[in-house]
Length: 283
Image (cartoon, rainbow, N blue to C red; front, side):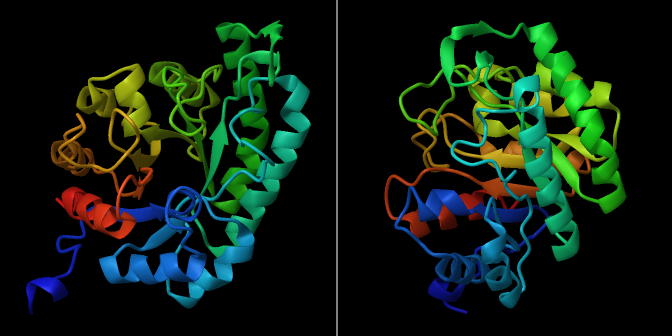
């Protein structure tokens, strides 16, 4: 086998996934067909955060959707479980996605605390306190947990950073769940095996650091993993500060058997960057 034909994924102990928006919106506008072809060629088993109207294409290529969107229009992380004003809409849309995933045989749906403003898009509307926001999240998530358990689909609540305001997808100033311990404790309070944390290594590095220790501390509630380089949410290369191989080895040590989604914003040839990231995480 020539170097050009060498498989990107050789070990396969880490199940890797491609996050669709990074290469469809921020990259070279890969459509689902193109993204599936790339995933198959690299040895990835999933394309994630993609809408149900793309799932037939996934299945045609023998791929899964490791984690589905929550169905909220616009920026899906703005209106979340921390605000009773949005509970009905968030619960209805998330429940529909859980049901769709159950029918499709897909394992998870993403969830969010939401922004801390009482009117989620208006900072002048006043803040929901951390305690109130946590209580609201627990109440909202407990209501949806029964459905998630019945359908065998996991809802993973994502921790996001609020420090980087340079780009709408590099950071999310105003998001309430910007501390990994805060999100993990909300999930623990819910107490359901189908409500977990989406541990985004990029966001955790920015807000908390000490990633490997954080993985150990959160091992009981981790349901999904995302990657990206920091600073800048770019490729997993030597221009950024996160050392991914030992982090992946820590996941194996912890017995993590979920997916790791590659969620970086390409700054150069997206296929070359994706190959590099996938190979780096294939420990």
